[in-house]
View 1 (cartoon, rainbow, N blue to C red):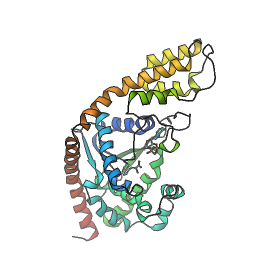
View 2: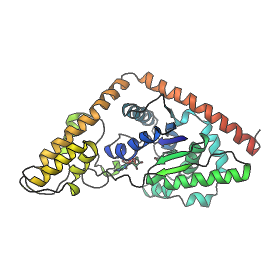
View 3: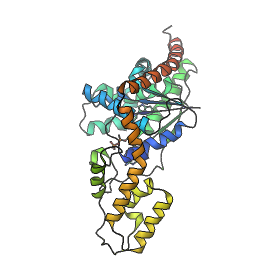
View 4: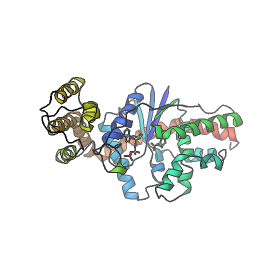
Length: 320
Ligand code: ADP
Ligand code: TRP
């Protein structure tokens, strides 16, 4: 089984990204032959600054390497290093109706947020279909927000196969319906757009300051507290061990345990969890050449698969 996923290089990773997307994805990658790429062509639709794009690609590569991606197992690469994907996108464009794309939520959402309505944004789902079909992926684990894109991909694969013969594997999506929404500092969904994030990596002092600013109710030190409704406890549950979380719950229910104590425990748990990854990240950051090398090697492997698919596609549509 081939499992594929793509990540947009969209800036500093936070706990929501890690527990909501990255960790489930890294777990999935272990289940079969795996492909994981950094979607820089997609990022161009909304992020035109060249230096920022290069930097973000590099940062996301560091993040994945630090968080335990196994480059011997996973084909890890940069999307634009396999430009065949744009050729496939062109061919898929010719079987995609405009009305079909007009129904896509992501385009409307981006326009509503004030992004320039460029054609790349409009055809974003066709490029994503090309990403998936080029590597004949069986399974694509994605977040809920990507569900419609997967449906579009399946639809295009079926349409192509019906018209030109069986060329593409029709992929199954694995939609993370029941991945919990990770709360941010203010209790809303943790998100860059709400400015309420705790980054995975950064100076301990800065992270501690953020943890100390998590919003809680106004119960005093001696009051009994409820872990189920507390943002600090919810984050602690994700990061600490089961035993540590149970201890926090006992402390909450016993009283004489303040939110300051809980926040300190959360900060320490974050350090214990992400500290070793931070060290690994720092090591990779010292050797940028090695990071690009890893991506280049991944791209070489990916291109072999891409070339085989494209040969079939070109023949099927009459370009050979
Ligand atoms: P942001 O909301 O910060 O812009 P993105 O939209 O770039 O984050 O999210 C990238 C991935 O991380 C998506 O798959 C999304 O589902 C996941 N994700 C982001 N924030 C959270 C969260 N608070 N809880 C769970 N998953 C999240
Ligand atoms: N659109 C995805 C996102 O924003 C990223 C992505 C691009 C992707 N191509 C993909 C995900 C192919 C899975 C498969 O998160």
